[in-house]
Length: 287
Ligand SMILES: [Mn+2]
Image (cartoon, rainbow, N blue to C red; front, side, top):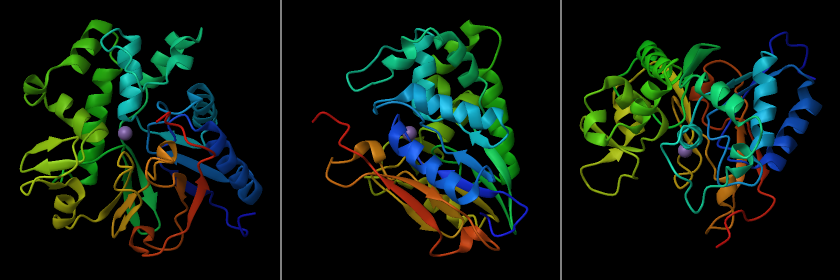
């Protein structure tokens, strides 16, 4: 049990991507240690590339409904929404057929497009935001929340043609639409170059990881994020990057599901935080 504490244990988990067995193992361990006195925060990408997307979605939805789960949308949820809306076709590596073929696919569409892009709260001594990919370097915590809410409102709009236009906007047009720009930064961005952002890793000399520019701003809030399996676990003051590529197991490295259990005062400044890792059960990519 949680040592007599009256507050629940907060647990932040990286990209799950259909790795339902590993997610269930993590939930079972959390249940053994904390009963139902834990709150799970997902950085998004619950689905795709892995084998069992529906089961992961169902688990997360149950926790959210019970008031014990927070989930922000990742690029793979946006891809799933886009396929259901008919503005994206399935790629060779997409494994979201179990959701698409389910009788509840229309219901999943509605649930997913009602999810936030930014979750925020307060841990002892530190305000935090959870996003899938990045925040713009100059955004305050309030900016992150406001930008996320504005973009999420477009995604949740009643007119599906407006939603399609929002998601399908080409890059040139996206830069002129601040909500489309925010959506991209929140779910896809890895590198930035001045005002511009890219989902690519910062390979060129004039681009850099989004979080390096963010750190120069000396913000007083923490960011929990995922999306960057090749970077892997990233722990720095104010930053908790938790995508350790469970679904990428065997592609040149071991894959894990990683959960961070913040403890103590100013948990984003702790250099060696408590991490629980569940190793990938097998290789998920066929090559
Ligand atoms: Mn991602």
